[in-house]
Image 1 (cartoon, rainbow, N blue to C red):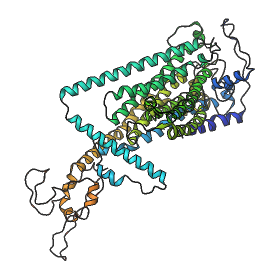
Image 2: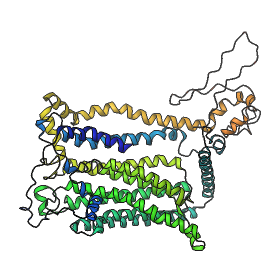
Image 3: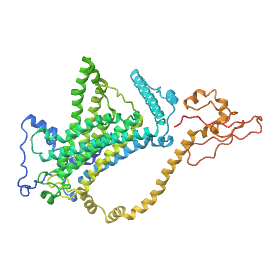
Image 4: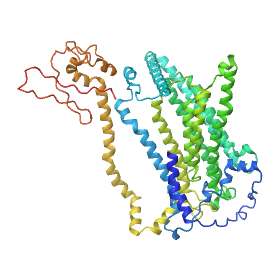
Length: 602
């Protein structure tokens, strides 16, 4: 959905106006042979089918198409009322902002319930027994999947409860030894991550230094190393984390965290190595002094960055196809055909949920990184995701088996959205740096005559906005506007945490039994009728005799009508119904306080 929205914005504000306005012919290329006499010579066109296929895989066949930055051209800004440059510049930023808002909205969707229930809240098992089934299901397949889901939830709940009881019985020495074991495992995983990103840096540097070589592996060396690291990393992480004897939920979350660190660090190191090689970041080179980038080797460096991101996306998809049909499928056929200890040990491949989830996140992060250099990369990624879904479905149903480590999928939704936010931030940082500080290519693209792409914004402001609008924009960007804005936002910022703490306190008070003790007298007469319903809420009715002392309050409690309800808390959203006023025309029978509606916790 995010990719389709991004593609719609790019097509509406950039591609369609560009086709309608008919961009001018490309200007003659700059003569770089004068500044770089030893520079590369233009290569001849591909004549063989193998060369044409290789150009498609590397992206060179699309250098003169709208897939990459270099094919977008426009005339002077003063000659048109619609600015293609401004639309091309703001479209990626608007797409990133919309993706951030959409992901953040889905991420905070379950936060009010988590804040109300608290971090230590555990839903009663009886409530799950009687309320987990979905009576709207139709079909045997859906019912079977739901049964497995409920069974998995019960197994995880019971296993975590058993681990919690064992943890409470540990001594201080055992806890200290377990903490040292946790530190050792995580330190070893951290060293593996450092070694992986170092290998990615060296592979990218070596590939760019030998970019004129016709050897196939050198062109795909960085994507290959990144894919190899992302394939072996989660397997090693799961093996090491299993040695720590974590709970299933903690094990999955910790594996996800380290996989996120590995994938985001690998993409970050890949971006940094490209910047150091192409944009001379941290280097002093003669060819970088005049143009701000290595103009001798990279005349259109935006296209080169787009090609590298294009190769990453294509290679990840090809690796998914190859692994499914060349590894998982033969493995399943061999296991079914032969018998023995080795084949029983080999067995089918386990479907690793953390690995598959993080692969999708990494692919989406690469797409966000290429919005400026490869505007149509979201279309390509949408096609890859559509095909990958059915390939993964086939691999799961035919070639894989269920993971031996159970996890709670519902609690991983928030973490998955958080990982998307981190990937979005990783893509935004280099894009913002390129747009604001890096010199554009002199030989191609919309911003060939600008020192940085962002320079088109002040130029358009000076050309098309009246003086009043210019002064208003300068005021909005000054420090004088930040102080009134901060004063206006202060009440809103203060109200949010206060309401959250009030709702959390109200939830804890409700679960602690205060709400039950308030209306326990009136509900005694209906205990026999609502016994089954109260079992869903896991209320303790064994010591609820009015003549017996309350186990939660000191001292005996005399029988009689219940007292008045507690005063209403302004931060609490729950209200108890007021007691009815006595009627002189009715009998003198004592009036009971009406019971509030019994709802399950949360």
